[in-house]
Length: 222
Image 1 (cartoon, one colour):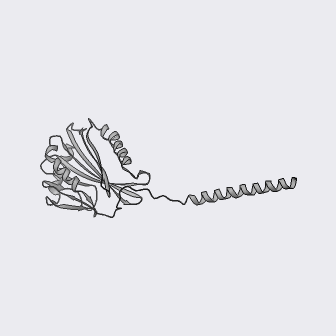
Image 2 (cartoon, rainbow, N blue to C red):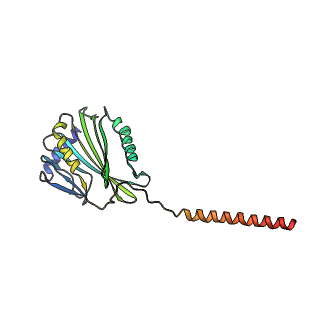
Image 3 (cartoon, rainbow, N blue to C red):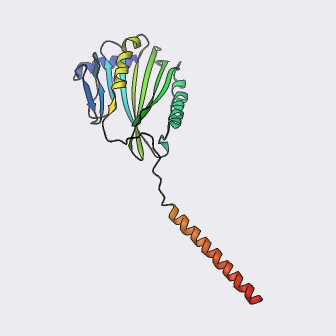
């Protein structure tokens, strides 16, 4: 991360500054605040986005992921299982990864989770602190969208930057089209019932014909 931040120092000098304290619209649908002393280093037309701190080795990344088909999250229990999977397969595998906070939230139109954890940079060996807020919206009946606002800093810089990170996480908002309820049943297709009903109807007709044939044969024999 240290080498990345050194590179960002060069990029910052060449990047147009977003005025401190303003809200910025990204990709036409995402809005977030830019704290004093931070600046956006990426194009506002697309995600992912990156904010960097001018005075400390810290950054905030914003990602977008689509959730569809069998991965749709339909209740809070399923959300918890998904978060537990992230903890087990990602955080626990980081160098000296240590979970500090794991909480979830549900607000009707959106739901999500907050993860705070420590790790160590695999290259520099520097201790890092992370704060991740994941926010899920249901875009339409068949798909959801996860926005991840990930703040990270060196352990020494985190106490100085954590309020700015939380400001961005709390101020994040999706302004695009969405369903009023983030959780919902998957839309179920019933087309498969048609051939099943036809097959069942054919089977019943066949059985009826056999019974009728057997009854006729029995009457003849009598």
